[in-house]
Length: 232
Image (cartoon, rainbow, N blue to C red; front, top):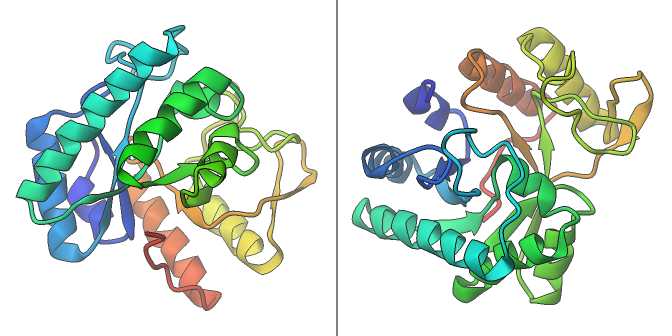
């Protein structure tokens, strides 16, 4: 979805859909092959089993079932990555599971237990429950910010469907990232200043302007003396 090849030349880590919300063996193989060639790290973008809604609706599934589904997704991508000459180094939940893992104990535990089985890092929101669990298990937890999403005053993302939730203008986004790099803060949707302590920034590949946004975000980081490097 989108121009994966162009994005892989801009990012240092790629969240690869594992077939539950999007993706198939062919797309996974292609992304892993290009990532291996470019030295981009591969992450398992695990999700609720929900292609119909692109994994963006909460699914009330029990922990054991969810854990098995996530393990299958990770195993599928890991096998393909190995054949492409690379490996999966981290797990990042997608969509509704990402948000559930910030506070839903059973679903957060399912994510972290799957990562724990192979010692992978876990990517999540600052203060998220899954990152706390990852730390308790001795795993690397990576705090993430979103370049192309608006923030509420409590530090959560403004829900999709709300006006202004998804940002599209590269100039505006680049200015926000420049401010974040300089101050460690970002403007919330109501105009207040929000502290955002993050180690990695996400640009959504399904946003039509993704390549332009990623190009401008990377340029702003480099202008600030922050050359992007992989976190795993």
